[in-house]
Amino acid sequence: MGPVGEVLIGLTMAIGIIGTLIPVLPGLFLVWLAGLAWAILDGADTTHWIIFALMTVIFLIGFGLSFYIPAKSTKGESAPKWTFLVASVFALIGFFVIPIVGLPLGFIFGVFFCQLIAGREFHRALRATGTTLKAIGLVSLIHFACGIAIASAWAFGLLIVN
Image 1: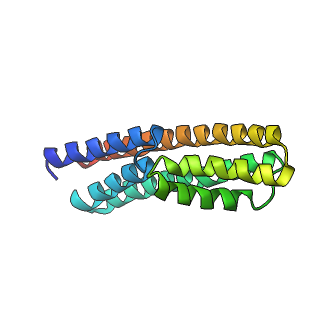
Image 2: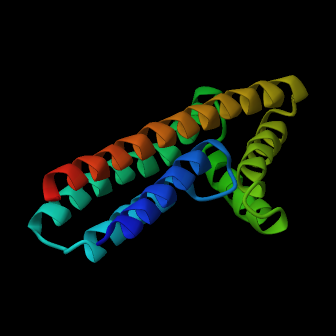
């Protein structure tokens, strides 16, 4: 891969990292996908695949935590067991009603709705929603850190391969 390709991979990773903080793009996935493109297009030798495997582990950790942390936050507010499932359905609906931004908004509304139905207390539902917002913020920061780690692995790969 030439310098132009490396710059394009780097720009794609930078856009993905920005996307982890601004829910417009699937940021962490974009950074990982750029790493895959680099591994394939830059020779696909053993070193590339080892570095890409490291990128994949980082991606899976970030992706897994994006489900674990909000689910744990809803349980911490003594939410019904079905809260995370219903909130995920609302997130999916929100994604299609308001592309990209509707995903977190739908999830938040789903948590609020479940808490309101289960407890019939507006303030309790609002408190649980606030806890969920904090969890989503934490997930965003974790995705940002994972995106930086993937990009750093790619930069390290550039150094050792060239």
